Length: 362
Image (cartoon, rainbow, N blue to C red; front, side, top):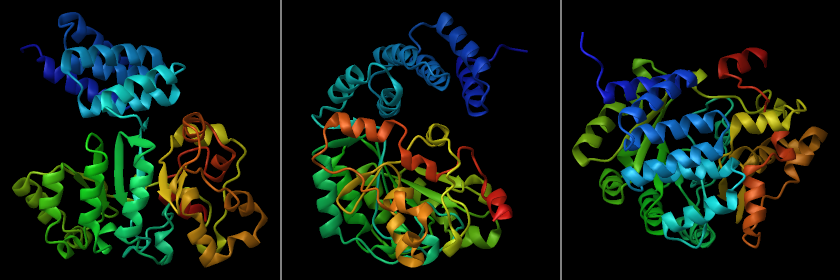
């Protein structure tokens, strides 16, 4: 039997990383680098492994080798932003990131915007609270201006447009083009359940022209659901128009519960370990109501309050009092807010809770 090729060995290492077998992945990467010290893919994957082990400086050194031998690829830039979250050399990393992106704005690893609170699905535990029939569509006149204001301060390595269900907003394509204009070097995605893609005749062409990917979230894997999601039609369109398609999920346990209970009975976890809650989350910063928020759970909490009067419950009051962070904040304040544990992290569990288990406990 012939020896596996370098690409086969690298694919095996990727599978080990995805499966949490980091020691095995590291051994393969180190062997690949011994065989070919100029392999950018091996250096990059080893950088990922180092970061998973909690070694940001080692991760930075391997990433520099990957960039030296492979050029400045989008995934390298995104990974650099991930390293900067935990690196003791955060200020140095920020300088490198700004140079890489050609910007004076602060580079962050992730940013999202909800262009509607409305959704056609009622997925339990939705962190945007859209499963409770929330209302409101963000006009492009307002949302586009908010994006412009924050683009002067922030350069996200990854930017996502979502909701709610973003295809419910008739101005979706305007948002896609605006994001490409403001953040041309960012990895940009639209996150949709796919049910209403036919409402936007220009969607596929706009995705292709702007280099924006489409991520379809699959909350069930039944034939009936998959047909409604248009996933096969979308796959065909991605081949025809040549835009990147991603899928997420397939069962309820591909999604996680971020609060206890449902509807009027929902409550924060308050399990006394915000550091652990932050470690398993990592944050998905969002912009809404003119502010930057650590995550959608807190940024959109007012929507649940409007429906269920959460403020009447003492446990919710500290979270509802949180006001996010404004444009006037310093880079240091933004960094500390996004990449350090905050008291609001106590709202979420300190352990991963699959949706089926959460529903069984409610």
